[in-house]
Structures are given as structure tokens and as C-alpha cells.
Image 1 (tube, rainbow, N blue to C red):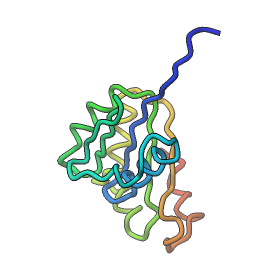
Image 2: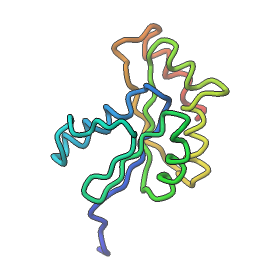
Image 3: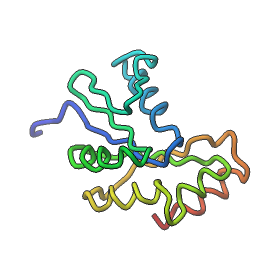
Image 4: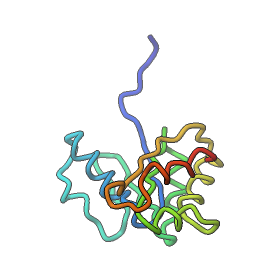
Length: 135
């Protein structure tokens, strides 16, 4: 075995209000790095023990998403299955679609996709998931 990387850098991307901050905070909390209530920030940009978390959901922070994506190992795409939210994010002007394209342009060949808000959807997840394979 060669040298193994001890840490992995992840960018969490997706449409505004898809649940990126909550998901990232929950993952950080589960890893024992910090308490979830410490994750709250008004600036959507915070550094924790040498790691940077960038929340690119709002258009004002898209430049942070581009800069942050260039320095990470993998991407986690949060897709909201909420009624209207999924369609808005995947529309021609949607941020989910834009973030997918930017991640591809930045060189990501694989993407972890997490469907959020499946418990509050109409139509059900099974119908929403039919739209994702083309991406």
C-alpha cells in the first residue's frame, strides 16, 4: 500500500433550501467533530479545524462554490424532493442543475446524490427519481 489520505474534502451542493446546511451539520456532528448548534452561521462560510464549509445555495455565494469545488475530493449533491422544490432546482434556471454542471466542469466524474425531504413529497420519491438518471 502507498500513502493513504487521512482526510477527505467534500463540497455539499444543491438548490437553495434543499437542506445542504442541515445535512452537512448532521454529518459533521455524527463524525464527532463539533456540536450541530455550532454549525449555524449567517455568512454561509465557516472554517472548522482547518476545514472549510461553503454553503453555495444562494446566488450571492456561487463564487464560493466554484472556488471551493476546485479544492475538494468529492461532491455531495442534495436534491430536494419537496413539491415544487425539485422542479425549481432542476428547471433550466435551477441551481441544482447549475451546480451539477459546475461540478462536471470542475472535473468531478462521480457525484454522491442524496434525496432530501422525501417524507414530505407529493408526488412520491419513486416518481421524482425517474428524472435523475439523465444527469
